[in-house]
Amino acid sequence: MSVVGIDVGFQNCYIAVARSGGIETIANEYSDRCTPAWVSLASKNRTIGNAAKGQIITNFKNTVHGFKKFHGRAFDDPYVQGEKPKLPYSLHKLASGNTGIKVPSFFTDAERRSVMDSTQIAGLNCLRLINDTTAVALAYGIYKQDLPTPDEKPRNVVFVDLGHSSFQVSISAFNKGKLKVLATAFDPYLGGRNFDEVLVEHFCEEFKARYKLNVRENPRAILRLSQECEKLKKLMSANCSDLPINIECFMNDIDVTGKMNRVQFEELCAPFLMRVEAPLKAVIEQSKLSRDEIYAVEVVGGATRIPSIKERIAKFFGKDVSTTLNADEAVARGCALQCA
Ligand code: ATP
Ligand code: MG
Image (cartoon, rainbow, N blue to C red; front, top):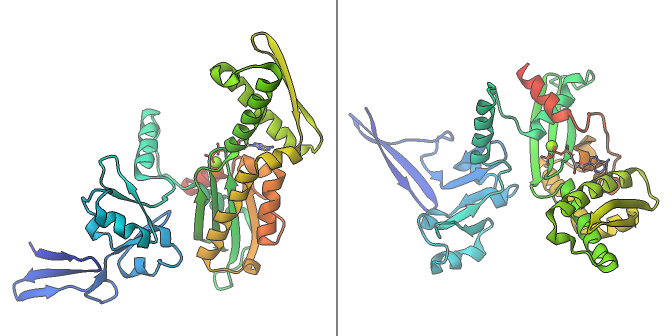
């Protein structure tokens, strides 16, 4: 049995092995005996040491270093508070009061484990858990007959998925029989439901003013209103004219009516619409591609049917968005392909 000694430094780490001939400091994969105390977390993998250090520019928020002194230290500790403004990543107070580092990994380990548990309860034998964006890329690649050969320049495709709760963007490079995910970015809290909530809020105010109804106090009324608002939102994707919302016996036997058109809707939703661009920017920066190296921008997810969302994506990449994939089923189809 060998014994190793590990020096975990603030900046660098070393590992020494005791062998019969004496002590030897071992080298890392770069033949370097010094390994930077860095960890970089991406959506799919974690890199450490030199490889992590190389990620600092492209993934600065999720590339952590200089964290040795945060171990077991309270968030309110003056040292932590003093370091905080100087860090490229963000510190947070844990439930215990200790210091935590926030990295926006899209699906946490605990969330993944919980999904695996559910599959077991359902009596399923889960072969693999795949990220939505990877599944979508697989679904795209499988049917494309005209992909570049392995020695040609790959075809770079952007995938944009705006669902009900989250916004995910990725860029993948395709060659025949080969797929490489180049970059991924998210807004984990932007989705179709934000737009429903904006409408709900608007009509709550309006019904309060017009009918003196306090809708917020009535959970059933809120649920009904939410359903109607989602319908209205979908209708506005296809129509620019004024569209009605009518709910009979809404509260206290009162029938309510209202209306809205796409222009008004876009004004109300401006703060959410503005959030579309950041992940697009992040993904293109991460991929180090220029916009003219992008072959196509494929959109999936129900909420990409909102015209103004599509326009913003098209404007950002300077090309029309493509809808080659089944917007609702692409993820499931990609998963099936992976395990077929
Ligand atoms: P997530 O990916 O966030 O986990 P999800 O996969 O369940 O959620 P999707 O099925 O992709 O989400 O999309 C559902 C969302 O798309 C809902 O908010 C729905 O209202 C919205 N949506 C569907 N059709 C339209 C449409 N025509 N116009 C506007 N929004 C639409
Ligand atoms: Mg989805």
